[in-house]
Length: 202
Image (cartoon, rainbow, N blue to C red; front, top):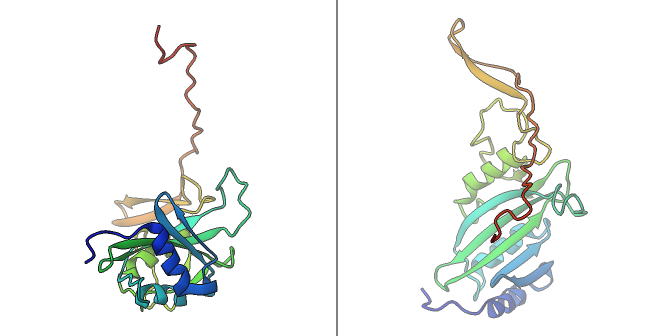
């Protein structure tokens, strides 16, 4: 393993040389290299990042879904769903963050990368379960956190906070049953501080 991490600007230039025009955006933000790629180039770019000299990102350490529909107080005009990954090169002591947007908001689909990093398996299942992002080629894409009969994807911004159904144990039937939600949505009123000098020195 390299003792000292290289400068993020140097890594950015190395990745730019390896990817050519397949990097939609490549920048250093908060001292980290951030790469955005198109869904069409996603799998090929990930393989290049794993295998290319100077990159050698042997480990995919995180993958999560995102719903941008309420981003910027609703002013976001780009695609709705994205996947963000964190890659680590143990041998070169460097990291990169990769973001890829799904091409279709109605059916968000990306190719699986489980053939590149087997550890992506459960992460992709989580993104499917919580956001409804489908990973084409995944050999066991099913829910991992919610129940098998769960309706919808709970991390989507338009998913109701109370959900669609509630479950309880029915003593007569001696099993768990599902019923429509019976609770009323609660309106959250922000706390208002009325003192003029609250928290200030008197």
